[in-house]
Length: 526
Ligand SMILES: Nc1ncnc2c1ncn2[C@@H]1O[C@H](COP(=O)(O)OP(=O)(O)O)[C@@H](O)[C@H]1O
Ligand SMILES: O=P(O)(O)OC[C@H]1O[C@](O)(COP(=O)(O)O)[C@@H](O)[C@@H]1O
Ligand SMILES: [Mg+2]
Image 1 (cartoon, rainbow, N blue to C red):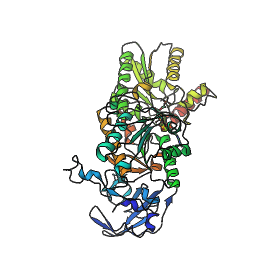
Image 2: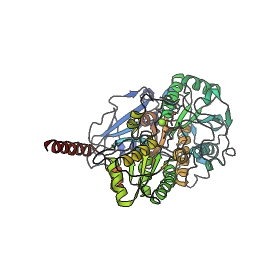
Image 3: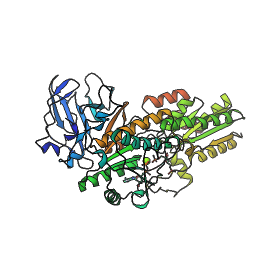
Image 4: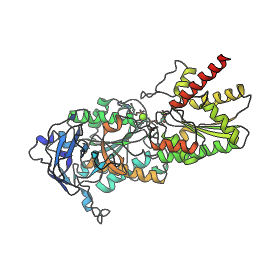
């Protein structure tokens, strides 16, 4: 029996008795103690805590009670609010493609662990429902009217996701009624739609951008759901970043409030890799690869002249993942600056010191800077500039230009030295390209998982890999936090070890201040 029915709503139905069920060969005998029902997203948290080696008690709680806690953070299902919705055998049962697969359907008991590094006695922790085809579907193929929309900034692979949603719906589930909503959320009510068939989308994965066009701003939940209803749409596939997923959660809530049999599926998209919970966002690898070309160019330019400094600005509003991974991949980068790691210019351990030292040692250096780094410095030079885009995202000031000027000024004034500065800003070039092979495969899996989830009646979910296994994740889990580079994690340490750049940490600042104070004391004492 499918775990989707284990919601506080469905538990009131006598026909739905979810337990006991088998979980990895262990018989579970859960008892519900209390429930926490997140009204924002119908998120159900089942805490199953093992009482002894055989018997497991289940609690609905957001607190882990004992050392063996197993938490399933479930996604909503249409029958949570439409308990009489009929189900049908999954047409994949007859699919030639799946004919020899050992286990065509994902078991309702399969869960994906959020934390896979555990100690012997630590709780088993949060799990998500494993993505994939289910034995039963809640839509008849010829009754499906699906739509796809893409919102927010571009990202390599969007077209692959669109293509694969269309092809999966059509080839696996026999759906041939699929609409493309043009121009993002506002397209629902202000633009035309386009009919999507496997033939129409056949070649689009070879192109960058989005076949459906995109936009920022213009999210109007009521108008969007009115439009969905008017068009008779019953599956909505929403491709976009954190802002888009917030919008998707509101659409799902409105659909639920109106009691409509409409599945809302989110596919997370962002070049910045700033979406929480999932391993990595699609297009990220492609962007990092493309960034190598800019870094190579900066390196070649810088090493070919006297006192050459190459600066490359890469995307990354609040998260420096692109800069960090591009630096680690390149090995030509001397210093990587990201929003998460504040830096300073002057004094011991500062950037100027480091530039001077590398120029002495090598005659050139390359700096990679994420666009969101050092914004507070640039803002000091441009007071009052506080612009936002149509979605409400802060518009960033140009840290790259600011940095080039500061370095040139410093070396000309303090060292009477001319810096040969080469500034490269490949911002849009790294995201306006088609996805590479591995991102293409990743996008294909995301699209297929989303289609299986929607057909199985799940709704208000986001799909994505968690520890390499695709899972259905409650939307709130991916929007409540931003994925950022953790300076205390090993990856940042690996970068520091590879570039040997200053860590700009507090002890450096402290040391810097102490040295300054001692110097001034010494000066004063003489
Ligand atoms: N909190 C929110 N609630 C509803 N819609 C939102 C919210 N934040 C952003 N959106 C909508 O989502 C779309 C994309 O958001 P944006 O922040 O530009 O990109 P991304 O989804 O890539 O983060 C826009 O149409 C915007 O209006
Ligand atoms: O200029 P645009 O198209 O608004 O996008 C710029 C922003 O989009 C991004 O590429 C990605 O942001 P989103 O994921 O919110 O779309 C940021 O790195 C960048 O700051
Ligand atoms: Mg965003």
